[in-house]
Amino acid sequence: MSIRINKDECIGCGKCQQVCPGSLIKIGDDNKAYIKYPKDCWGCTSCIKECPVDALRFYLGADIGGKGSSLYTQKRGDILKWIVVKFDGSRIITDINTKESNKY
Image (cartoon, rainbow, N blue to C red; front, top):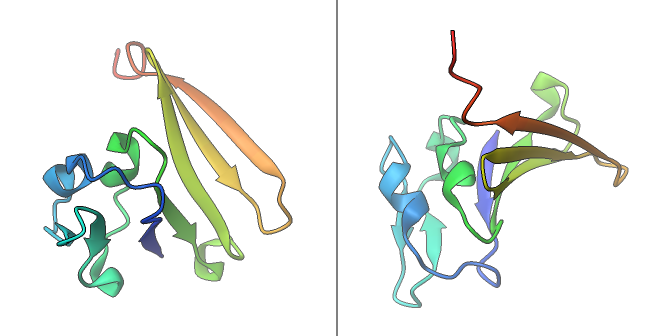
């Protein structure tokens, strides 16, 4: 599992860098985010949830059934969409209401 950053889409806001618990994401001289050691990524997906332009993808390896699928999120108001793009191009979308998700 690892995170990949599309530098063409990255706007250099630094939000991903701020939330990475492993301090793996850096901002380069080109003002774009990059992962210094991708193999050390914990797979927490914190950075993906913070990216406002969907420039980050979490790749789901075969070891967890992903077969090369990728995951990204889109936030629209209180709704956080978790989008899995399967290797065949199909998508699975799960909507999470962030206001309701932590209620007990």
